[in-house]
Image (tube, rainbow, N blue to C red; front, side, top):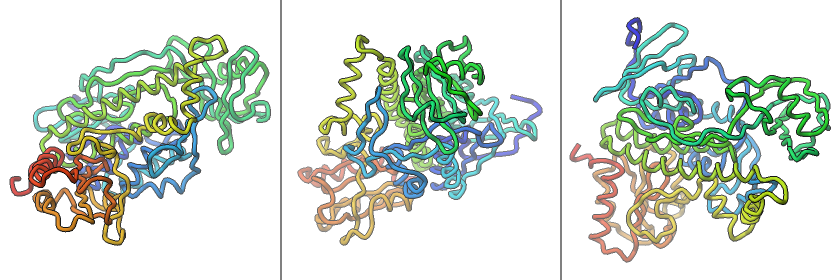
Length: 508
């Protein structure tokens, strides 16, 4: 730590990185009344856009914050996305309120998330870079460098959302095991002198190499394998080398009049050994990097941030013990393993070319499963994260156990909904079956009334259940089966409330 830095800020939670993970987390904490400061090393927004996709899982989570409609107004929805080879992943068959993908630039996603975070009360500081940290039993002391020189920020919790080369992860001593990149891809946002020489979609040249062309407003995105990646994969891509790679893959000249952004990415796959080290946590690319199959990165980042956000808010407000944060590691580290498995499998299959390739039959089989009516839904749910299921108590055989609870109508006439209720308040919801009459379970939840709202559903809205405890992220934490004795159900609910929402208010 620098001796010249002066301590000038104290916050509840400091977030390093104003990407999708950091901005989502800032909004989650601020709406729950927790002082959050988001630091971003870059003074200005990037002049390029990495991704153009929000999937159903992200839209489900944004819906539970009242934000999905705003995002959906920004672009088109599509019923299928690219999968492996020329195949398409059928999204319509998924069990979700959003059976599609939204076409929206990541830059716009970040702008909307920043508006929400600031509107909720978070602060965002641009051009300030975290350079070091140390933690003790009470807080984390962070050194920050910016245009005004070094400064010190003291925070109770620090969350690294600062990308794949995370300074926070390295400074916290968290390992980042995995596999290094073996194959590299070139990506360029360019203006072609004659756009007709590269038709939109896949273009395969005489040597079997291909160039994928994706139309964007005012330019085209070209993607092709890097034939000669340098020893340092972070070495900048030059216009000359990119032009040669495109021409060689196509087998003819495709003159680039202007290059807006040129980059290289690999198929490295790494997962942090732990998502929590004391008072330091990781989310987004700081916690996992993977091949960019399906443009899943921004979506996984939002998922991480929502999961840790509501838990960290309860801990920061003193309503739950910090052991609740261990469940963030348990749930999202397991999700990270699935993410790496799925993206690595797609990356491997994308390399299968030619009828005699030993991977081609596997690719063809998965392509068929991705489009078939019976198998497309479960496969699409797994790839997009819609099938995400966390540990839950109560009825283990219920289809919603541990999963995102659908948008159930609330009230005798269905005048309200679960999604709207979760969007209005930063807490959980105990749903009582509206057809069940008086319900003793409401008295069980009353000591947690400052964190859990009790609501009666529209009659018969609950599927094979007489009550469901919904976490702030929309997942079912407990499902009460109609066959469960009343005393047993009450005890199950009481234990689940204590697990996810801390001690009841009377004992605080």
